[in-house]
Length: 133
Image 1 (cartoon, rainbow, N blue to C red):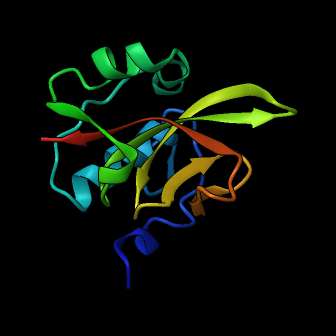
Image 2 (cartoon, helix red, strand yellow):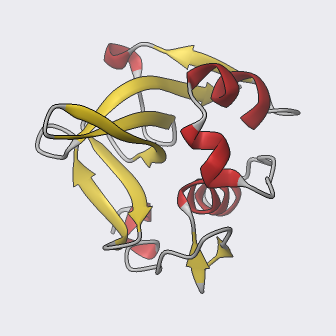
């Protein structure tokens, strides 16, 4: 069984960081810690920070952790994906998740809880992938 299966179904919870409920950054934090043994920073306002944009994501969100940008052709399971959602051709929100493979991301939302989605069919588009080093 793929490691992501153990996280599918965790409910969405604003500012949540555990299996009883997690926001997008909280789920990423939990996966990095439990699966990959990485110490990722926690934040008091994670969703607001992710929504603030790429520069803040890269400079502040990873404070204290070493990350490098990764090109789409070079991604691997465990990389962080910063993405944007569209509705009617307009960006509606920014979001983050953990890549489970080249085209699949584990993420969470209010309506679905934690799921794995195929990025080729999902309403999410890449902003930038990052790898912890």
